[in-house]
Every structure is written in structure tokens, then in C-alpha cells.
Length: 124
Image 1 (cartoon, rainbow, N blue to C red):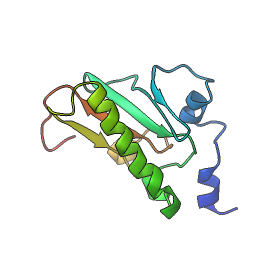
Image 2 (tube, rainbow, N blue to C red):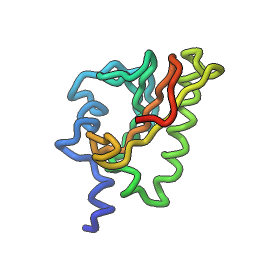
Image 3 (cartoon, helix red, strand yellow):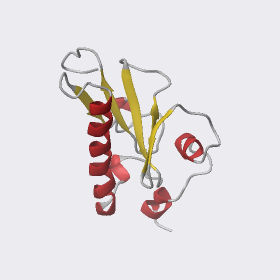
């Protein structure tokens, strides 16, 4: 099995796979057949939601062309959730952390929706 195929399988030790399966608790805000969204346990802003594909992909660096749809779809769900929380006009960020130096600590692709406060630039 190729590494790419391996990263597409549900991982028995993956924190986010366990959350999606209901094996670990989360504060769910949205779910459909493609993604699961929940509040970050260590929020960096009043709104800090993680949007996680239900299919395991370890991160952007291992994503394939087949994952392009879910990456774009995650951004559309982020926009929907931002609007529901009233932060769509004031602004918000969507962020993929890629690798340990960028702060990725769970190696299951996930999009951060962060907003509800003024943010500075550059981030970090």
C-alpha cells in the first residue's frame, strides 16, 4: 500500500478520527456526510472552530487531487459557520497548519475558523 493510500484510511490512533466516530467528546457545531466541525479545546479567539473531513487525510502535504473538493468544501462550511456566528462582515481567518513548525499537532487535515476579535498581521 502506498503512503498516500495509507493516509486515506481511518487511523485507529488518530484523535480526530476518534472524535468523528464519537469515541471522544467534542462540542459539535456542524456535521454532514463529508465533514465534522467542533469547537477547538484551546481557542485563540471567541470563535475557533475546527472543520475536519470525515475521511482521514493526514494533512495538506499528503493531500491529492482527489482531496481538492473537500479542501474547498471545508472553506464553504467555514463561511457558513462564520455567517451563522455573525462574524462574516467583520472578518475571520481560515487556516491550515502544515507541519510541526506551523503548529500542526494533530495529523488529520483540519481547517481552523478563527474570528470574533481583531487580529494582527503577520500571524504567529
